[in-house]
Each structure stands twice: as C-alpha cells, then as structure tokens.
Amino acid sequence: MTAPNIDGTESYLEWAREIEANFCQRANLSDRRFYKIFYSKIQPSRLMVLFENPGGESAGTDKRASEYYENGEHDMVHYRNTPSYALAGPLFNYLSHLTDDVASVPMTNVIWHRSRRAADLRVPSAEAAEIAMPGLTAMLQRVTPEVILCTNGSFKLFKRLYLSNVKEQIDEVTTPNGVRPARIFSWCNASLDCTGSHVRVIRIGHASKYASRKEWATVIQKSVVRCL
Image 1 (tube, one colour):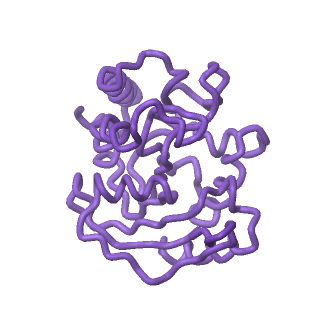
Image 2: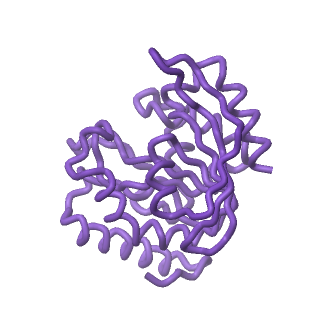
Image 3: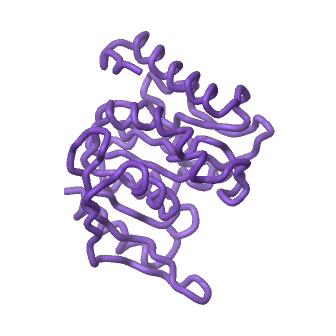
C-alpha cells in the first residue's frame, strides 16, 4: 500500500479503499456490520489514538461521521454531544486538553473486527490484531506519530506487535475497581518498529467508563505533561 499524496483527495480515497479491501480479504469479511476501520482521516500528526476494537451493534445501526473521512470528519467531534455514542463526549473532552484541533488527530483500533465487547470477538484477539496489522502498519507509516494514546486493552496488543525497546515508567494513576484497583494512566518510551522512530505511548483507562471518576483530572494533567 503506497502512501497517498497528502493534498490529493482522490489518491487518499484510493489508499483508504485499498486499506479496507485488503483487510476484508484477510478477514474474509464483506459486510461493514462486522468491522470498522476509520474514525477520522488518517493524516500526518504528532498524536494518534489507538483503541482495542470497535464496539456497537452489528445491526447496521452503528454511527460513522463519514465513509472514509477524507474531508476531515472525526467521530469524536461529530458525536461529542450524542449520549448514545458513550465514548465520544468523554474522549473529545480529554483530547481537547491535548490539542486545539481534535479533528486532526488520527484514530483507529488495533483490532478492526467489531464486537459488543472485546470478549465477544469471533476470532481470538491476537489473531484479529494480526489480520489488521498490514493496514494499521500503513496507517502508522503515514501518520508518523510521536505520541500514541492507547487504552489498557489496545496497549498489550500494540506493545507485542509494533513496539520494541519498551521502557515503562514508574508513574501511574489508579482508581477503585472491585477487588483490585484499575490502572487508568501510565506511559512508556519505545521504538515503533514500522517507522524506526522513537515514540511515547500513553496508556489510559477507557474514557467512557472512567472519565467521571475524580482521578480522571490527574489523568488529564499527566497526559498533558507527557504530550509536551
């Protein structure tokens, strides 16, 4: 998959469609009810967001601001005031502390198979992540991020498949979560294998679940510092 002309809408669309076609062939999927790849335009950016896998229903009622987001659409911007899209508002608010232009931040998942919960995937998560790997690699090479934002679930897969020389830092935020506290912030330095560049990876709890916790203000504060 060749990199598109950054300023050429037509070539970007060709690239995005090729990403989708190659994934569908590898995954043996043809119906978008069962996968989602794009949440934003994939463009050069210092910051990139990677979640674990697309949620939502497989009834064709999932929300998307655009087909390929070639005009700069972004789900977190478009649906930030839509209560039924539980992630959009909290994540938009979080990203607004890290950048003045949330719509410019590329976003996708480490797994592109859709499931209501990660535990409900039709294929093992490691296999699903490897199926998406050629496409996500092409995206990472196009974005060339310096800071990558992951959730707890996406970080484990991303670390195994894409990172080397990982140096995790002793700096975390936790919140009560039953028997054991949940870690909702940590970070590491690493090498991104597909670009050969140094990156900082910020790991947070899922904003739709934890953004209402009192500890979230500390997560935002620490994230801002690590994005500098």
